[in-house]
Image 1: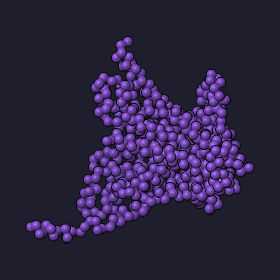
Image 2 (image 1 turned 120 degrees about the vertical axis):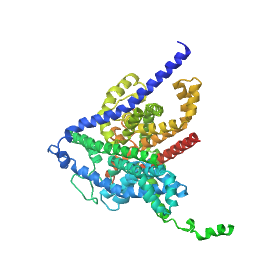
Image 3 (image 1 turned 180 degrees about the vertical axis):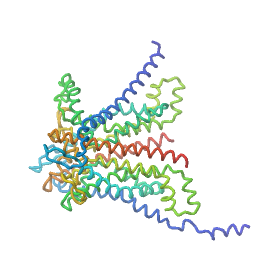
Image 4 (image 1 turned 60 degrees about the vertical axis):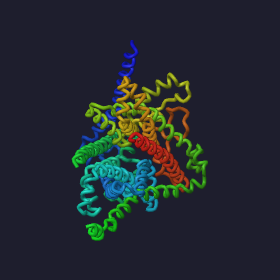
Length: 284
Length: 315
């Protein structure tokens, strides 16, 4: 074999190997989705899985209604806290990116993104559970809000940064005050990107277990009261999966399936919104 | 004429004299992130104070964990966290970089963005779902098809013996899958940022695709890929639930990479709600502080590396 042929051969082989590794990387995704769907299916097909709450092992008709509602309350409250603050902060760091304070805020949110979620749970426990002497949905949603905040900040900043300076300048040139330029001109133009960020943060928060273990704690009963302990889907999966009962393990797979579908739907929706944003920003 | 021009500015309101209230309001709101961060650190330090006072630096090197005798040392948990994370990176790095190279190539963009979406969806799956999958599918499979054969053939090497369904290796395996998206996404961006001219020059000189990739692209992107690796390390260090479900939860420094162990995050997850008294919870919070400190340093180093590489490549 000539030298050139050998080099070509080596190059072709490595290229093939890398494509192979790419397929290998996608295998876990397929496996996780397949096993969650196939093992969770038997629980999910019963409508009472969505309508009933926890029942003792052996009693048929158990469901995760309380966990679904609990996750909704926890993530809803966390969104109410983190999204407005996160969006305003993101607008600030993008619109006044030249200030020293913006640099500090950006650094703080970068550090927050990297903070282990279990540590955020410890913080919420020390802050809201220990002083009040009982677990609560509010403590859980504060923990989730801390987790969501930096995600919202960074995606808002990115989306606002995509808007061409010309739009801002034309607004200012027409005599609009700064707040109207930012809130009524820039923010609507950046809205799809901001929504993407909010959706990603919601998806992330819906799947988190660690910060809820000693804040929301879990609850066997249906509860709408955020000042008391409250159940959440990830807690259900975690606790049921580790029990020795086949029945509860099946319910854990069912809850995992609900969780995966929820998170993937939110995620794919956010991708769709983001594509519109990029198209829109290109037209401005 | 000249006089009128000179008079003009006096009749126009100077924009600078209008206070920018919007800036004031948003800058106050944006104080939330720094304040939350500082509060987290202060509150955790206060909570851990009793344990810090009692054990001092001995906490970090102690190997005992016994709530009954109030004897707490963090070393086995630190060992577990560090080993699982490093093993995960060793497993994930070759795959992650290969995928990044493939995704950064030009042409067939539709297919590449589809694969890219697939990899990013890996990051979207909740950690507890990885946990239940690892517990019932991955760990039993890896025990039968990886651990037992390896220890049969190489078990005479001390750290490759004693296969177990739940242990360090299987925790590292699931961690490797979980950090892959981080590793791939950032490496891909860095490789894409390598100026196209470099690649074209190399190809024009007659280099093959692989020679170009290995001798031109990868050296240019090396620091960035290193940064991505460190960022993935930060993820792996802090990961809690999936690891807790498959690591076996045994508080000791294991003699084999397959043996059950514990990590900082999983000790906290398992024991915190049961911790009574003052020293026991304080010791658990101190584990959390050790964890935060390690991940903080790792993340800041990674951020610096990634940013300086991107700035260098852009210049």
